[in-house]
Length: 209
Image 1 (cartoon, rainbow, N blue to C red):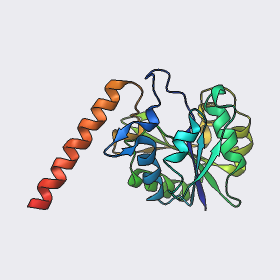
Image 2 (cartoon, one colour):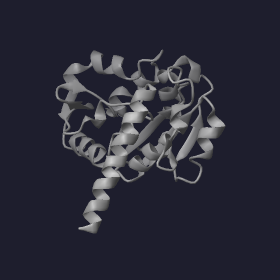
Image 3 (cartoon, helix red, strand yellow):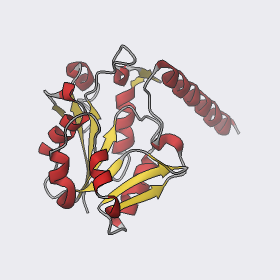
Image 4 (cartoon, helix red, strand yellow):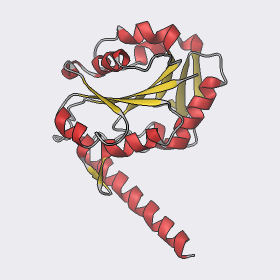
């Protein structure tokens, strides 16, 4: 059950006024952090769809072992990036993991749990939840939903497909708020850096002990 990931990294970051995917996170760009999380997980391949300031984003990824593709219609929203990613997906993929690049709180362990849940279920869609709230990333069975995903329009991602097929949806509870937390405004970025600094301090204390 091969799983390919499509990382949506084409947005314009209008609310922040700068490309948030290139913000510094401990010496690496935010988008680099998410890519590394994916590469450490059980996904079989990673496709990064770029658009806004695509050359700058690609510069941060060209050595990372992922396939970077350009979405000329990125201004149309997430649906256009999903469609572009599907055009380049590996043959033989059983499912596709749709990942948002502004969700740096997700972990490889979370992704692995979702993949295991998908492989162990008969459901065609697996969506993580935290305290009852749906989040990201989401896995879709390509045989059942590849066509529907390739026909999406606008900026709502795969939500329309999920809502249309709730009987085929597995909501998988994750004990991590990372599936519902993104970086949308500067306050989110500041909070994320604070959490990273606290985590680094804890790790340093453990190493000293």
